[in-house]
Length: 352
Image (cartoon, rainbow, N blue to C red):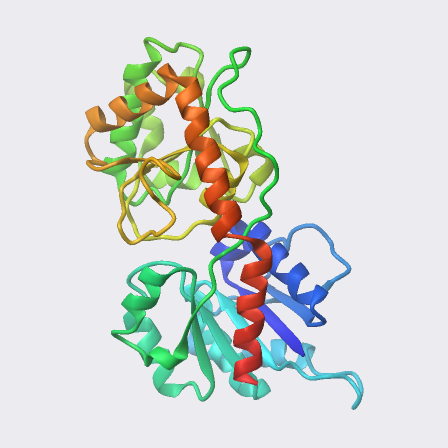
């Protein structure tokens, strides 16, 4: 079997580790893997188990057709004995239409990864025209949402997986607490509430360090808000923070202020490491379980709610570590990389 893993700009940069784990697992099962990424975006570390091709993101229908034709030509077998592409697996909604065009040209099965709530109408539009199409949902709530738009037989559940290593030390006494602030930044009120809470807690924990995704900071007006709160001396903005997993996973707390129904593998990786996850309560995300995998904030636009949660974690490091250990155990049981690969492979085989 030969599979093309095609990622849009967001997934190619933010979810490199997720894609690499999946591609390595598929290759280990005998699948020949080719990764397609937008031109100008790195594909992660060089690897012998995959080949990488690039494509130009479509700015219009005409450029999209030309770009897809070029990509299809680059995937053509060099000789008659070489296996053609059987599966096109698309990560990122902005590349769905492009990926569907590539799959049709290759006469390949199409797998579309659904990573956030609200993609149902888009899925229905694609399903009307795609001949062989499967929608991959990372959890049951997203599967149930999709059922309102596409036939249940066209949906498969494949929970994203990580490699659960031993938890790292969290909130050690000899190190300043580090907070990793992630999200899209589209909910500026939620980011403002979390920042204000941090500013209030800093009075009792003056050595706190805060790292925030730079793009989210621009969208959420984080810099000016941090200046007003006198947090600039402890705030660092990092481009593509989620894509820099070693940095993110070296922190103590992962803070996700928005309740946007978005699945982010960095959250699962943080749990696997034993980090403390503080997140806006979002019933659409099955991995967020209060007191089991994370401490959830019900009123995510209220600074006092974030302040209470943050202070509770920082004031009782031992209880925080217990929560981190619980999250680690949950991920080890429910989000194994091998389970993800197996579910994806079964979907590929069914499409063939």
